[in-house]
Length: 217
Ligand SMILES: NC(=O)c1ccc[n+]([C@@H]2O[C@H](COP(=O)([O-])OP(=O)(O)OC[C@H]3O[C@@H](n4cnc5c(N)ncnc54)[C@H](OP(=O)(O)O)[C@@H]3O)[C@@H](O)[C@H]2O)c1
Image 1 (cartoon, protein in one colour):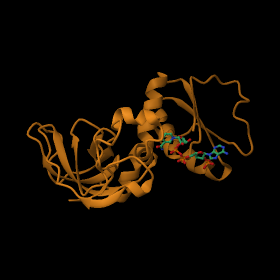
Image 2 (cartoon, helix red, strand yellow; image 1 turned 120 degrees about the vertical axis):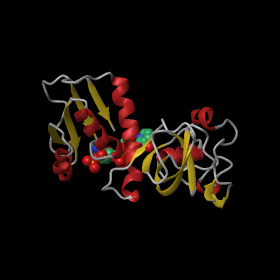
Image 3 (tube, helix red, strand yellow; image 1 turned 180 degrees about the vertical axis):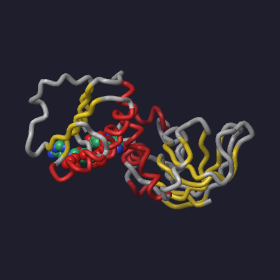
């Protein structure tokens, strides 16, 4: 199969298109024909390994996984013998920063990992870019221990992480004050925020509210 391959860390030039064997799913994995992916900050960070700490996950001297692409959307073409959640033909999308592979024609991912079926109304191009921001938003929300009925601020609520955070916090029953620029106030309200403050006209810190979580993005 064709893939964007990197065998050493460095600038974008270390990536080139080449051929690799098509991966074979293990018993608990699915094989996905990738229809859309993204090149995002997580991919770029692991490619450059500028933050040395990333090498403890991706390989100290060279990358273990030559094909990046943590966000993906595509079609299941084969499932391992233990997989019950998916069948060939399912349209799926997700986030895979463990074994990566979205920058190849085919990728494998564990069926219990960050992959799920796509809503019918989404195209592959719409589904692929959703998951990275949501992944970081969810990680921070869970780490905060915030509970239903408590209050949170999302500063930067129009961004990839912020827009996901507003929606996830509302899903968890949190009262959300969102901060964004004036032109996006309507958009952020439509995401479910209880109060929206423009950082161009107001200072969100002047308030009597007590926040359990302040997400600064
Ligand atoms: N996505 C990733 O892979 C990733 C990973 C690790 C860390 N991060 C960091 O997490 C942060 C958010 O990431 P993201 O992917 O959600 O970014 P993003 O999609 O580019 O969103 C950036 C946000 O910053 C807001 N912003 C820009 N200028 C501002 C200003 N002067 N005052 C207040 N808000 C301002 C924008 O809001 P307006 O449109 O309302 O101005 C927007 O909501 C960034 O600092 C990023 O470097 C991202």
